Every structure is written in structure tokens, then in C-alpha cells.
Length: 294
Image (cartoon, rainbow, N blue to C red; front, side):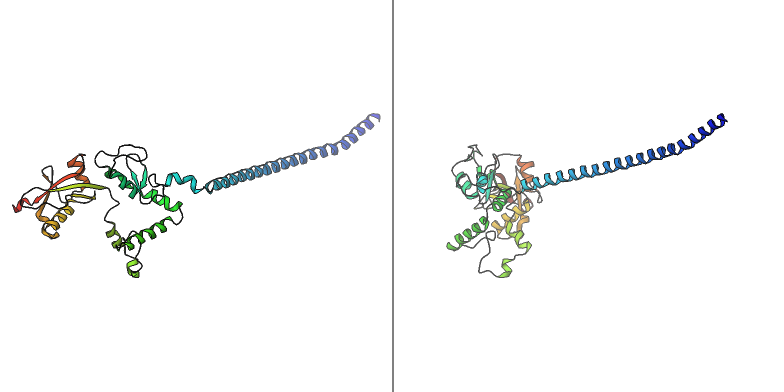
């Protein structure tokens, strides 16, 4: 009996302890699930915080860059870069020296180079004999000046219109429109604008046209400044107009360089590079009556 009681007591003890063990097991599983849930939430919200912080920093840096780009600058701080060294005024018809890249008003630098051949700012020699051949219109600089200085372009056009009207001269098309012109004249078509340009924006070539034969007369103006894209045919038509008063007779004229007859489609740029070969300007060309007609 005591042994049975002891066995019963052991069974009872086992029964009493078994639910307790099961409860502890289930309790540990729930705690692990809770810990995993808390960890997942922590990682998720931590990621959201880092993402929000990164977006905020990017937005703030972008705003700073925009503020720097929109920063206002006084016009007086850029005046040294957009004013003419000669007249001390804002650049008008900006013209740049190709040797030193200093920019001046066109009228100022042309008037200056009539007597001197050096840059008025850095004193570098532009060219010993033909300094005017080494200056060119700077369209980019002029656009910058007009954008920076308010009403400069309109005031300059008005001033030039008044200048031509006081002297009874026709107002050039690039200066402005005449008040007495009709609406049709105020809005020229594209072809008319191209004709009025005359390729002045192209690279220019200085040439000298001399007569080769005694049976033709010399031109009154031998020295010409024309576009480098002009062809020998253009020169033939020019000579025919001056000699025969008829462009249609241009085929009766030959143009030569270094005793060589030039092709009708050769450009002056091509002739200067392949025939004249970088000799001193101007490019010397001769004209004569066509050999077949002699």
C-alpha cells in the first residue's frame, strides 16, 4: 500500500506538473512572436525614419541650390565685363579682337585701329598692316549685354533711328522699322530677311581684283571684302557687271590665282587655303577675257 500510495502520489504529481509545463511552453512561443513583431515594427519604422530623413535632406539641399541659382547680383558687379574699355559705356555692336579676345564697341575699336594696330587694353599687336581683319562681331556677348541691361536695346534702336532721320538718311532694316512704312513692310518675309543679311555674319575674305590683259579696263575699286563662302562665279558676275554692264556675260570672264584658272564652283575659302596658301592678305586674283574668245 505504501508503494501504491507513493505511485499515486507520483502520478498525481506528474498530472499537476504537466499543465504547468504546457503553459510555460505556450507562453514562451507567444513571447517569441511578440519579440519578432516588435523587432519587425522597429525595423519598419526605422526604415521609414531613415527614408524620411534622406528625402528631407535632399529637399533642403535642392532648395539651397535653387536659392543659389536665383541669387540676385548687382549690375555694378558685372559692369567691368560688359562695358567698353574705350568709351566706358555698355557694349554696342560688340566686336572682339581675335588675338586677345578683348571686346569693345564696334565704332570705338574701328576708330581706334585707323591709327594704331595694337589692342587698347592689353597693348598686344593685332597685325602689323591689317588689324581690322582680325576683329569680328561677338553676337554672344551682345546678347548677354542686352539681357543684363534693361531697355538698352530699345534705347539704342531709338537713338540710331533719330540719328538717321536727322540727317535725312534711310533707316537700315537692322536698326528698326520706319514709322511711315506700311504693315506689309514691317513684317518682311524670310526670303527678304536673308537677302538683307548679305552674309555679313560669315567669315570675311579680303581680295584684290586686277586686270590681266590690256584689252579690258581696270576696276575702280580693286579691293573687296566678301564672304568666304562666295564662289568664283560670284566674282565673274561682279566683273561682268562692272565691265559689260550685264551679269549674263559672266561666262566671258576668267578668274586666275597664281596664273591658274579657277573653277566656277570654288569658294574663296578654298582658293585661299589651296592656292594662296596663307600668304599675306589681301588675296590677289586676276581677271581676263575668256581664253576661248581670244
